Amino acid sequence: MNKLSNFGYTKVTSKEKTKLVQKVFSEVASNYDLMNDVMSFGTHRMWKRKFVDLINPIKGDKIIDVGSGSGDISKEIFNRNRDVKIDMIDLNAEMLGLGRQKIKNNNINFYLANAEELNFKNNIYDKYLISFCLRNITNTEKSLSEAFRILKPGGKFFCLEFSRPESSIISKLYDKYKSIFLPLSGSIFANNKDAYKYLSESIDLFLDQKNLKNKLIHVGFTNVTYFNLFNGIVSVHTGYKV
Image (cartoon, rainbow, N blue to C red; front, side):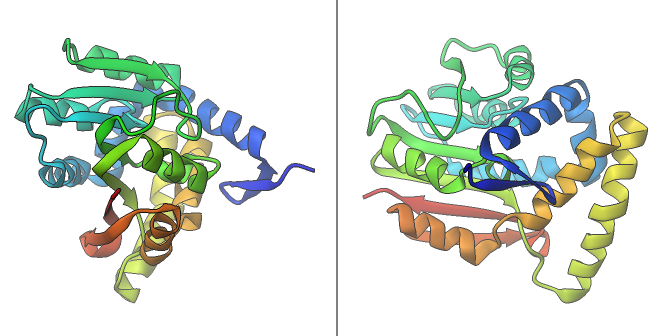
């Protein structure tokens, strides 16, 4: 029997989850950037700039951007340093198409691929990036193992993801925001309440900061650290392959 996974609060098989998640992103792709601005009141742009600050792209870096979506992270990297090479990876053709439209550079390649099974050689990337994607992957640990495999010794892992607020008051307000505002805004601006209901539930069920840190250590990363943005609504995890 297939092990069941969470698609939001609904239990489905692993294969079903992967298909359902991709269906969500295909449906929201045309409104993806607009909804990011609406849902975060524009703050996602600040989070992503801070993320790229930490990535600190330098000349000669070979970078993989997994779950690259509409390409915000890779675009910000190229705005800062055009002497890097980036492979943008996404399992959703519509989302990958948004990235192609947004970024046109000879140092970038686009691949339709699953983060759990990356068709790349061992030890080839300096930096592995994943932003607002990890919680949507069916087998988190498998994707983290793949990240470890394809990084060079000395390479660095970077993850930007929704997480848990530190303050109980902010946590309660955030729960209301997720359960009420996200589906409502999805209905109004994207005509898709269910997709943004899934988004809310996926955040609720994802690993908190400490448990994600432990998973990174378990697959082999060292010097694993995290820091919180917006009181922990969003966190950044980093780790090294040695």
